[in-house]
Amino acid sequence: MNTVIKVSNLTAGYDTGPVIWGVSFEIPEGVVAGIVGPNGAGKSTLLKVMVGMLKPHSGTVLFWNKQYDEVYKRIAYVPQKEEVDWTFPATVYDVVMMGRWVHRRLWGRITKTDRELVKQALETVEMWDYRHRQISRLSGGQQQRVFFARALAQDPDLFLLDEPFAGVDMKTEEKLLELLKNQASQGKTVVVVHHNLFTASEHFQWLVLLNMHVVSAGPPDSVLTPENIERAYGGHLPVLARLSQRLSSLKEKPTR
Image 1 (cartoon, one colour):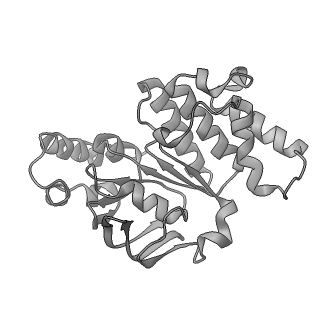
Image 2 (cartoon, helix red, strand yellow):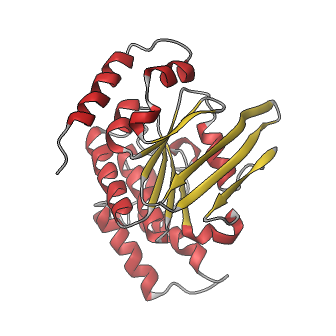
């Protein structure tokens, strides 16, 4: 597999001090990958460093062996829902059209291709009928669909999503998971900051288990071992036995 993301000896944080230390891992092409770990593990901080929103203290992040500034048009970032100003006076269509900005020259006109990709993205997430609605008048699940549509409209090779399933209903989560898997099946790479280990073990092909440093990275069955989970979460979790059973059942499923 080709490597899309290579993080080497990354240390980063805020004025209060580092949040992640010596983080190193790689993510291959064409997978849905999850960055998982306990609250405060530095998952969102890591994503912010990756997209240039936060300058690292040391270390490097490379995409296709290049710096972010060289390939940013190929990367779509979806922030946490709480970081978005939902009172901003914009329609659903306006928000999704923002995904095309990276491909336009300053003050460049909206093209036919831009409109077609925005329409296609909104139809994909089943939000075309809401295109004229203000984003503040949407439900949480609908807002998440709109921001994923914005990422789709960008037509990237890599998606970076920070907690995209937070605050959404089960139907929306299942729909988004289906869309993410579809992107990976087309050779694109999807990286999701996520907290649910059960979802991660069942739907993601690659995991980075993080707790301020990388505990383990690789396929779910090699990452989500009892020993690694205990190291990451600092003790026995009530879900540990059930998760181990779940992973065992996945291994025993016959291949088609």
